[in-house]
Length: 215
Ligand code: ADP
Ligand code: ADP
Ligand code: ZN
Image (cartoon, rainbow, N blue to C red):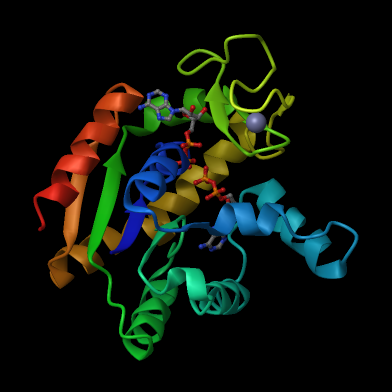
């Protein structure tokens, strides 16, 4: 199963992709995580951090190249879930070409819909485990002990771009560059929309329902 999870910044893509990856035993490929994990001592790592910190997209050419290499790894042979890629029409066209060569076309595109008003609060309250990458929210999905990861005991951090100012840029980038992909995938006949304003477990249940209905 080749899945793509879409949605505005803070909509819940990462949270849900983790659950889909577990259930369907496919790797979770998040371009945001790949970029955040680049070594900050390198020129490339520095450049990427500058784009991310201001809420701008990393240039298509670099992003496409990174994803193309990742999709060729052997763990993707039985499918994968892409999270946060593609984000531009040029990336979507490139992805189609790559997946055609790999003979692994997208099975379904899952768009988590959340109204813009709610996204800033979600992003500003997001906390991530330094050790295992698990994502929490100070209000909507808190850890049992403050600032300690439930899964591994690691400490939590806040992303440099998860502030109200950068979020405004990220949301306008989403509107201008990424939202048009909804029509792109509707036309391809592989698009589903899920209401992301429900509790996390309910969103997961809706996603499982869509995918179980495909078989
Ligand atoms: P994205 O990957 O789309 O940016 P995340 O999955 O990291 O989004 O979620 C953003 C923040 O919102 C996180 O702090 C997460 O815990 C929280 N969150 C995710 N889904 C929901 C939901 N359905 N309701 C409330 N908060 C949510
Ligand atoms: P969110 O969905 O909450 O915005 P991500 O972790 O997916 O968070 O992305 C964080 C940042 O990483 C983006 O604002 C952008 O700078 C960069 N990024 C991630 N994916 C892409 C992509 N496909 N193309 C260009 N830049 C990307
Ligand atoms: Zn952890």
